[in-house]
Image 1 (cartoon, one colour):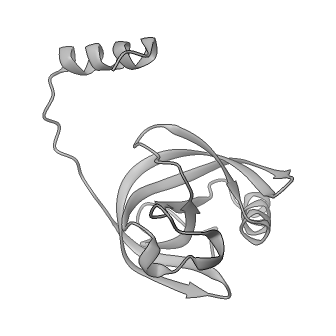
Image 2 (cartoon, rainbow, N blue to C red):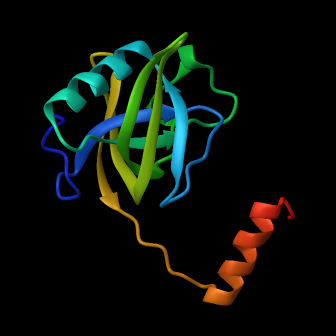
Image 3 (tube, rainbow, N blue to C red):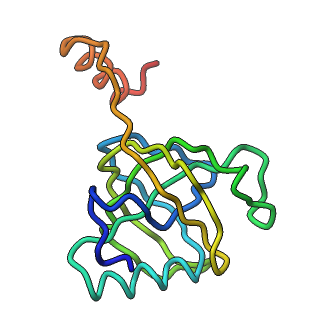
Length: 142
């Protein structure tokens, strides 16, 4: 099911992200539950490229209380680069390749899935301002 994921396939596994926001074209490292981690590992053995949708969980939501309504609908299509067992599940390293709108989140067998469509940002900063902002971020200046 997951091995056929490409940008053209508009449905994917959802990775709920607690206390983390992933920005487009960035790398992210986060914990996944045991079941999700095992699914990702199995799929990585069978496919060159594995993707999932990363959606941030709304503030104040406990893992035991997560529902479709507690996930923000704008997130990122994540290309899964690495999955490793950890104390509380699996450590996942992924690259955000495309901003997406999760248009229909649903639960199946205890996991979340969603149909999605790409979201295109309208760049409103010129290259000089973007470079200056990145330098300030790297230096730790607001």
